[in-house]
Length: 93
Image (cartoon, rainbow, N blue to C red; front, side):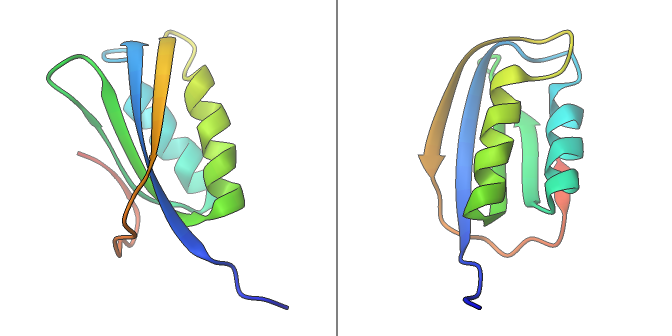
């Protein structure tokens, strides 16, 4: 059985995504998927999410980020490949 390749992604989510629990939603989703990384608010009103883990789990997280938590209104998600950083958990910055 082949080892799973570790990858990393960075997403920038825009819309009504600050003050609605989006970072906590991302943290819970990432933890459930076994991903490490972080979520943080940006000064321009977006939320940045960075995650490291297997490709298929990152794809699952992508779908969840497009939906967001109940009170969010996601208007766009920009996804980028990112360098793999060693992280032990998923943090809220």
